[in-house]
Length: 385
Image 1 (cartoon, rainbow, N blue to C red):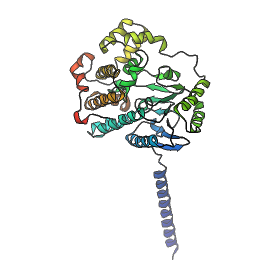
Image 2: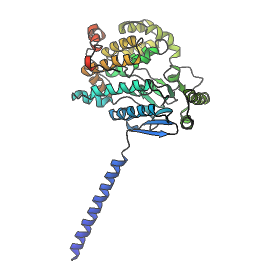
Image 3: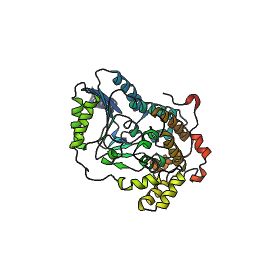
Image 4: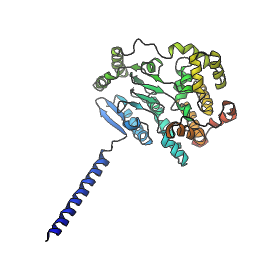
């Protein structure tokens, strides 16, 4: 065998070896690609970790499909006494549903937009009716779909890093995931204000608004989790006791009054009207810097979204959660047929020019007949519980 043959053999061997190393890496990356959601039994609890930190734990269909059956299993399991849900990465609990994916599916006329909302709302309802205490650690950004997998549970723990918002009127949607149920039940007209303007609440204000049941300094979260997991066959009262004790130890922003408190009279008087036009007129007449700021915000929102949202909340205020979710499913499907959702996603998430061209472009062009169309029954396609 000549020297050349030896070199050829060696180079072939090294390229084979290289190929093997590359393959091994690929195989490892397939195996190490982190699951979107972690479901673990720890101590006395079932623990759900939303695990897409790069996209702020946005809720995908795949995640919903894993969480729902596991929730049902744990609910039946005599060894599981509570369920904890949290987000990975320290930045967000969950920044909402996977809106961009939905918009793409809508444009491709895929059935996903029907299925996603149906399964998401079914999960929201399962959380609300869950027989085991459900503890949501809403540390970080908690928006839209993230509110849906937390607000309906028995306990919601905010931290100084919590940022809550329902900004859907700015993307041609409406505050869904049961927003029509919990928003009108917040103090005064606070929920109407949050729904129409997408106003952000931060930290302790999330607790003061009644969205969170407890507030804990974020550095105490590991201790909170540890104490919950160490409980032996706990009752809901035992769990509440642990939350209460850490709540009392958390001093951050304790002496600051809520950002909305000083404006509560204005919120109550301006947002108690029965039409969006009247709310705008109330704000205009009020004329305070706060009212003018809200006017500016509302004028940027989708006129259609504003009108369906106000009606959603007014109707939802006297409905049960399953009835609200049935109504919201109708609204979601009508929004998927309409113009503004795609345009909102384009302006806010894709081109990011923040200047959507709504159609209809003004409130007066959105007729009562248009609004009624959004609330029409879907017959056999209605969401039923």
